[in-house]
Image 1 (cartoon, rainbow, N blue to C red):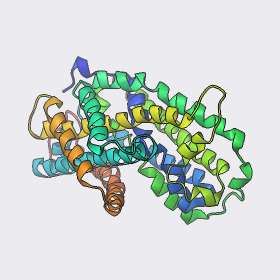
Image 2: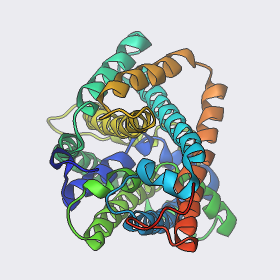
Image 3: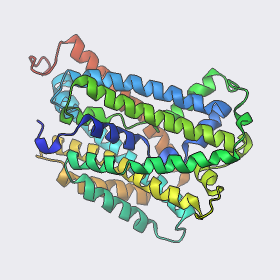
Image 4: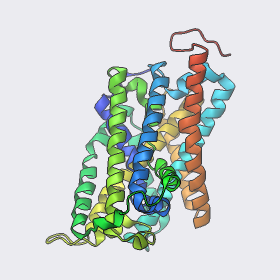
Amino acid sequence: MTHNSNKISPKQMLFLVLQTQIGVQVLFMPSRVQAFAKGDAWMSVLLAGLFSQLLILMMWALNKRFPSATLYDFMPRLTGKAAAAFLQVLYIVYFTVQSSLILMFFYEVIRDWVFPETPEWLITGLMVLACIYLTQENLQIIARFFLLVSIVILVMIFISVYAYTHSNLLYIFPIGQAGFLPVVRGAHEAMNTLTGYEWILFCYPFVEGTPRRKLAAASVANAFSTLLYTFLVFTSIVVFSPSELGLLPHPVLYMVKALTFTIIERPDLYFLSAWIVVVATSIMASLYMASTGISHLLGMSNHRKPVLFTAIAFLAIALLIHDQDVMKTLGKIVSLSSYFFLGFVPLLLLLISLALHIREGGRRLVK
């Protein structure tokens, strides 16, 4: 059931998806994708964006059959209550662990670039407090905030464009040097970065307008995110030589740090300031989806109470894990599991809905 306080416009939905997609991985993606696809890394990002669009179409087709319900609402009708409850728990765990990973990567960057001596609990705690404060509000207020802070994306683009004063376009040649399979492997690395379109499953019934406008909003957000990531990866490739790019964990920051402005010193810190806001929106999105899952599972009227407990859970995970190998393993698990939660499960639900002719207002065929 939807409420007026939760109603958002298609434009606001666009920025929900956009701000979630452009997250912590902005700093890491170029080197990670380039490790597989070399100079064709920008092709991998475009391929990942295309695959993300297919997932958006699938999620839209599923939600279109249940226009006034979220994923948590219509799952019991398609799988039965027991299976739906089990899947909801898995989704809650997935979003909670995803938030923890974002928080870990966030702390690593802040520690290495700005505050090497500041305790981890203080940096991560402040971020989590800010996220709790906003995520406790209704979807309408969250969407307004995401729209308001979208200006930081323009700041990131403006700073990055200036890097072309030190670029060498010959670094991308020969085009197609990596081959097809390495480009596909690079696309896999980029896919986890582009997650955020899952908002469709959780905000569709709250978005005003026709189904086509909702699809257009999510599609435009995905296209913009894909082009932005492609731009950053391409820029990193033409600024650094292939051998240099493979050695830099945060190539975008190194690229920005090397720039010189007449009246601005350390432009990388300005870039980081904008990036912190982007990271916060990504954490808020995962926190919202996990807490709404808990509220639905426990039969609560809204998601506000579970927000605090969910935030404490992913903060505890982030503070307890310090081993780099464990972090990488956890990152791989989340990356692979995203295909299950954002691909396999929605596809399975769509096929069940089509095969059994179950849709909103129809007879319940699964007990």
